[in-house]
Length: 173
Image (cartoon, rainbow, N blue to C red; front, side):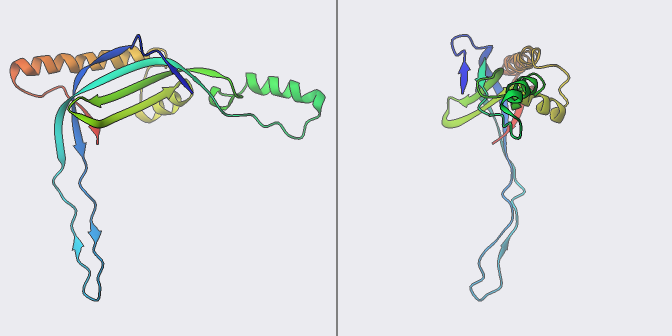
């Protein structure tokens, strides 16, 4: 369960985002006694730049995973539990452990059905950082992300005065 600070968002603003819808894959129509009609995938990519509202919220998250201790006597169970709790990564610790979380909401005021959310906790951040080659730790990540979003928002302002759409961010739809 997440407890987010919605009253004091880290960032809330409108940022130009390039929304890309990948082409549909090729499909094969049912044959019904005739040769199967294969449709080729569309090579046209549906892409547009939209001004999306991005909110970054901080908060905490309660982990809901338990710890299983089997094959130990009652006298050693508490000692084993204390040892495992101290030496277990945060995402594997017993119920009730709270971790910091960064929550992102991306919405489009022109399309009320458009909403993307992502919550990243301290435990999941290590995997995300290695996959995306992020070079900052979890504590510095919100500030760096806000800096990038502010640069995109500034590019939006500069593009509006210059008449181009440079500096947009891309997300898949």
